[in-house]
Length: 220
Image (tube, rainbow, N blue to C red; front, top):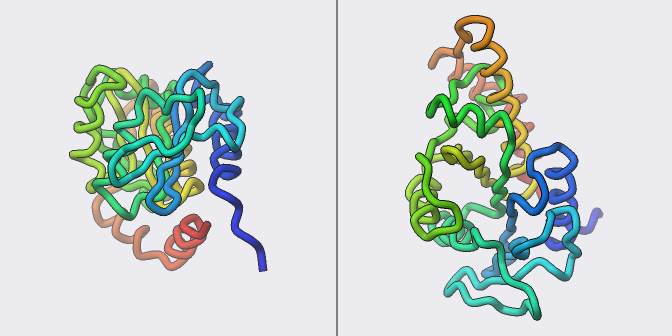
């Protein structure tokens, strides 16, 4: 039987994938994962690909206290992550990135249409948070207000937040929204994008194959 990968190692794995996909630049972006009543979050000032397993900062979800991080500070967006876990117990991971196409879409629109099956099945509707100063409690509260309704949120003039039951689900939701934004911008440049109807969305969500894929994503 395959042994589960320790959370700190999983965080390093997906941190590298985020950088490899160009979803952050330099020390931008931050990610976290739940480990019992603890949130392990990226340390402030680090490029994601540079973080070692022991450098993820442990924060108590119950009271927000830093449990052990000699010489390290949690990400400046620590409150956004913390409020997410406190608000929605089903969240196992949160990924905040700065993907170019998602940011570009957020500069011209708020509602990202659902245009293809992966988007419909894996993310559904993406929420929108108008620009709020980053790293503030105002932003954390704005995300908190929508985190039970959406699995992905576009942050106006800022970036993207995706959550999931585990890091794999949150990561693939990040990829799907970024690809959706890219496709929309390409299609919009050529004409009027074809958007899936409500009936078509229901048909996709009812497919057994899509349910199976989602269950696999949710397995740690």
